[in-house]
Amino acid sequence: MKVLITLIAALLAAGPALADSPLPPPERFTACSPARNLCADSDPALNSTRVTPHASGQDAWLIPGWHRWLFPSDDGESVVVGYEGMNLVPVDVTLSEPVLLFYNRGRLVRTVTLDQLYRRTSQLRRTVSHLSWVTSIGFNRSNQFVVELVNGEKVAFAPRTGAREPVRPDGR
Image (cartoon, rainbow, N blue to C red; front, top):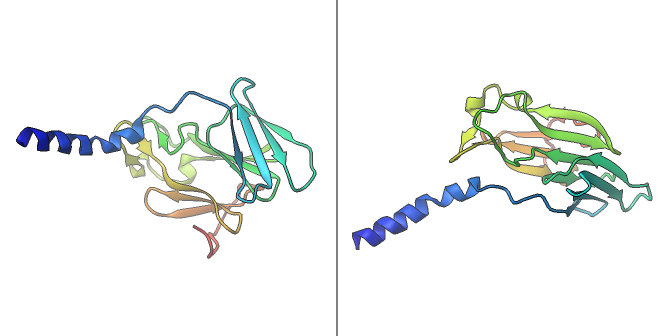
């Protein structure tokens, strides 16, 4: 009986390790804004991401590279690309690491690095094999891009410029 209890406890303790599992290999996928005003189709075979506005009648544009963490905005013009490892960065990461890229109509308008969110890497949360830099991420109902840091602080950005701004009351 003790062996069974020990085995069950070991399995439960291993649960967090699943969060550090390797990411799946790149594959084509599409991400759309909450109202589906804008969709981004990321294709690893082409190593590019095609962004298509649906409501505005504008032509589609390309973002260089394949991206697994895409956040199209309901404004029909903006896409935020998240860090390639999503919420996890390597334990030897430096604060100069880019974690958010803001694009407007295919043009990179701002890059946000870890040092714009944290003062020290020790503020990041340790996981089994990485550091977690964010707990929640995405657009709120006011079309602000909101990042909830591992310390619970929420940081908002304007999607068209990437400028930091106060989180609006209806935010996440």
